[in-house]
Image (tube, rainbow over all chains, first blue to last red; front, side, top):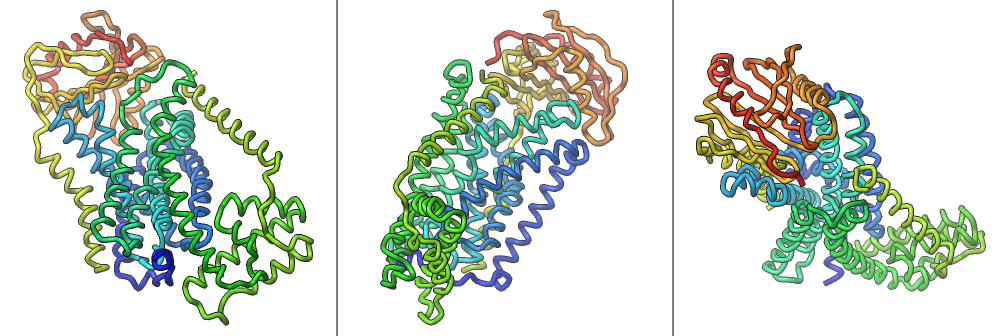
Length: 418
Length: 179
């Protein structure tokens, strides 16, 4: 059943699918609404708005690359990734603004203003926003069902919708903080928002919640070996998990902190953000390994070490092992070796996808693999295998972690945590 | 199936974007108030509302570190907001004026008057005009908090209610500590 679960099909021509035109209309409506919402900020605070857009657009780049890299073996079409991102930034946001406000008002009306002040953000925003974002993954399924071949695909599209939402929301918050500061077109509130929402809250934000809900939709769509009730139950559980993670993050729990200073603030951030982060990373790892096992098994049927060796099969299914193989090639054969291994790995992944699509043997894309194999042979490094863990890599990992903690510390201190 | 699913997505979005606000509008936001009883604005600040005022819960969020309260006296809106602030009174007033004029068509009058509360909290107040409406603003600073007041309505209603609202403003008190 794994084969059925992850076997990709050809991407449907988007323009030929009625759902695409409905989604396109929704995107246009969302864009118009977002321009209306942000338009007065652009007029009143042009410099701050420009800085906010540039900063958060730059922040989106590493997130995008990481999410895209999750599905190295069967990369999702760029046009669908862009569509998912646009859904998050235009449709989900423009729907969530009135929806969340109304739901928070209902909390105040049916409960009390005190309840809305304390828990309104935790109850209203996650309920509306997670639903609006998850509908984006459903829209992708309706447009290009054949592209959803594994739970991991759902993760990727869910994360992309979440990323679009996160970036759009951050820009609105940043420019809103400029207006609230009442000091004219100043960039200081934008920088503060960037540190707070980009660095401190960025890791465990909408991208993560969207990935979890997307995994549920992926499971619902591809695990046809399971009963409908179970699949719907898992999808609902994933959406509930995304809602709960978001609600925990927005909740006033630990709002009094664990004392003063940057360490105490960091501890609160970790306590509220880390459990969902670890849970979701674990689920992503499971989905990733499942898909990798399937594709590597397809390559194993070739039995041709010219196309892929046993050692390379062990490497291809793991992101860290692939990176290790590129590092080893770099150490032994320089930049040319590293680039050749990267191209070889991409070509092997493409071949695996073609095998899963049952492309006739004569039409398989083996040429690029043979070319890169020749290049590697010429460089004296014929096999793209992972190297032993070097002290240099360990030192680099430790140094990167220390730099990340230092950046967090500076951000917390700059925001008054220390 | 594809088209049916698409309509399902559109219907769900419509429910979030229009259905929830419709339900919100269908329920009254106004709550009666007990005459002479102080209302919590948030962040340890209280105020006694004007006689005949009702509380609009959609604009009322009395939180620990910041908060707001929204009263209605007929067609006149009376809003108070409190939040952490590190500057002085002049800075707070300048920022409030900037935010008012940041709205298209809003203008503030050049003159500001010194005001205070019964507890001796010093503040500044002024007037502003908006399309079809007029208004007053006031700002107080104390205990590392700023308390901002915005009153708006047409000239006739404002003229009738302003004395009661100004009397209410004088009852502003910082009773507790903000978290």
